[in-house]
Image (tube, rainbow, N blue to C red):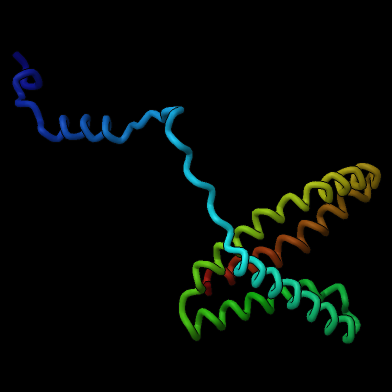
Amino acid sequence: MSDIDSAPPNDLDHQDLNQTHKDTHIIDDDEPSPAPATIDLPMLTFVVLIIIVTRECCVWVMGLLGYKNLGNLVGLFLLLGAALCYRHVKGQIPHRFVVANSRILKESLFAFLPICAGVGILLLNLGNEGIKIVMIMLISTLIPMWLYAYLAKRWL
């Protein structure tokens, strides 16, 4: 008999098998599905109101300065600055606020699908200039977004 065959059974092996059996769960069709997440309408309204007011005020101020197109970017950095100040002064950002903001971001992604289709058709019609425009768009979009994500991840 070899050493492997004569070795006493290890209790950990049996525990692992039992744990694996307990972890596997077959979903039964008769089980009720989990309730959908409730929508915190007051907080959702509050977050949308903050976003709209901040954006419109920044577009208005930048329009007075002659740079109306920079209003959205200034509003984005103003919201980031406000979040950083809040976190520095009061600590953690309230969970309700974070959940409402995440919900808005998830739902707003579908607004960009028609825009992407239109841009794709436009780029096909540009011919040789399309490559230059794509490179300019990538550089001018990716660098500010990378910087914004870096700052948000580091300071929030």
